Image (cartoon, rainbow over all chains, first blue to last red; front, side):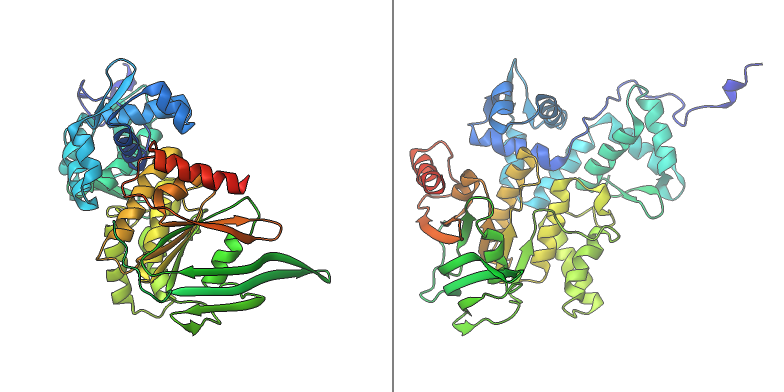
Length: 174
Length: 256
């Protein structure tokens, strides 16, 4: 008998539409939107990397993150500010957070995290359990890095919270 | 943006000099600094590395005494720490064993604000700088940009009249810096936030011209004011405009 059948991932049937989120911060994404706005909403990616003196790979991560959140789009070699991205830099802090929360709710990774937290006892999961979930959802990604970004973005949008003291992830407004 | 300028300066430095003594030798770091800071201004201090900018900022808030000369705050001599100053540091200076909330509350507890009030005030400024959701995070969990937001919230929580910033964005990547620069300007312009006078040290001339009403250009050997350049451009400022580039050229020529 094959006893590996006894070990099952937490997600019984991992959704196939969950994709990774780039490991970058919200401040960097907001900074990208500011910089694009200074340039009439559009710039070539390599021009941005040159002018900002940023490592190209790091800039691409931020652009990808902004795209995932629907603040920019990337036709060809350009990065272009969308109306939602322009709005993000014009509104006050609490309004920014509301929009971020709205966008996080559209991301499959956050939707699955929310489902698991809602099902869980007291609507919270230990970090170890969340790491296992992330391993099963995104087997090619480093779960610690995905966790870091999930918590970073989740806190920003007040979607979810994490207490390092007791090691639990919980649902906030998500 | 129009600043409300009053006829009397908020702070005045008259013939301020600073020297440090080391092994029976006096080293003059700042010489004959004469400077007025008006309420409502955003001032940038620029100059070559080692010219005494950080020393000058610490003399302004009273952390370091001047060796010669006089400081006046609201027309009265300033002879000790100025409790109307909040300070933000390049390296954030957060206590790693305290959470975001606790780091900010500590600044209030140090001023004997009761716990109930310090929690409420800290929560207010956590909200102002976008740290809602991060209250229980420890500094090690935060990016540089988030750590500096804690630095801002901590400085603002004591509700100072002047915000002093020593290279606040230097340890941050270019995009996070672009984001926080705008947020600092928003906070400065926010009528709900008490602080309306800002003094910022920066080594980036572009940053100084983008943000400041007036740029104080310091030379070194020892540190002295070479020139004060008033930036007469409306906000938001366009870095590519002729006016912006002219100011940059003027300041760059003074420093090099």
